[in-house]
Length: 494
Image 1 (tube, helix red, strand yellow):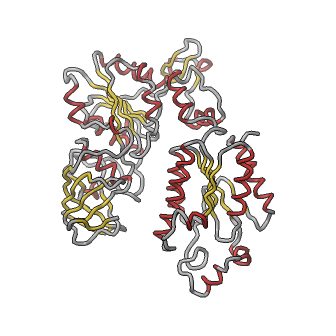
Image 2 (cartoon, one colour):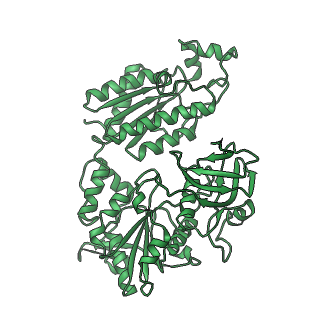
Image 3 (cartoon, helix red, strand yellow):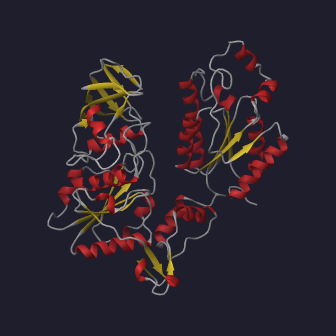
């Protein structure tokens, strides 16, 4: 959102725009600023980017409600501190307003997680011995024994080489960084660590890039830091075969397994099938942590396992955002109150964020426009995520009609704990028949504009963890079903 200050507009970019800006200001991205439409279109096509392109992905800035005549825009962080000044050379509308032009640093960034590890390119390059190869490991997940074995094999193959670990983390969260840093003592002396935030799309709201393009971006980032070789440990990134045109040599080790006979990790083709044990996937690791079970020593080093257990404690001790969504009159507030009481009786700390109560206190002054309704849900999500961060259970019961906003709340919650979505799918005819507040009658009479279910849509969730219908079962039955799901999932003791 932009607003004038001193004759200039101020814009706080969204997550993708901020990620692009970070790379520009750190000297990682070699471009002068955000791309024009023509420049972005050349890169925003299927397949590999054009030959000799200085950067493999579009670098785009979206600006909702940008003034049409803005020529100088201050780009600020989410706390309002200026980051850079943008000279607008092009503004065009493509579903939303996009701004292009060069950027100039305004002040050193202070916002963002792991700020001390967000190193400018020149600081890393000036500290390395350019006579030696530099292997960069780009990762967004913990370094288990398999990854560590592959890193050691890569360094052995390069001879005298240095190691740089680039940890891909969100700007507003630590991601897997603590677990990655826990492996520090298992890596060669002198290994350097740096935090980066890799954009996942050209702009906010744009489709996510395919795996191959994301892997190529990671290779370009590694090259900017002076790497001669790169090993990717990115979830969903393309393999080395997709990086033939990368500016650094991409290393690939194929499939590795744990050899139970020799008790070490090896290439799969060197291990007898009966002795081969595959690495656990992220879901299996998450489930073991959720149940409070230890991670096996053959899978991960003890320091990494300990850090993961700290980051993701058993679900009975883990923060949870329990989010009810449904039409007005669906019964979600009544069921939420009943569930909150049962959760409290089970020994968990509970905060109930009911839609109407939040409206009077947390969101007083907001209207019922779509923008204000979205802001109301974001405020609920922020408070709920903070409750979860400290191990509590936040029970939320707003209407939350829009899928995109619910997804944003899920993302906030899952950065600090877990998220469980309950869709109260009571038919609108039943909701309207109840109408104890007379809201539907006022909406039908045109007295309440943009009323969900009447004059504004409700986007039914396709990602609900549980669906209930209070017209088909009693309040007690609905409460019992939710509580049973929480017990089955491990958030409440049996």
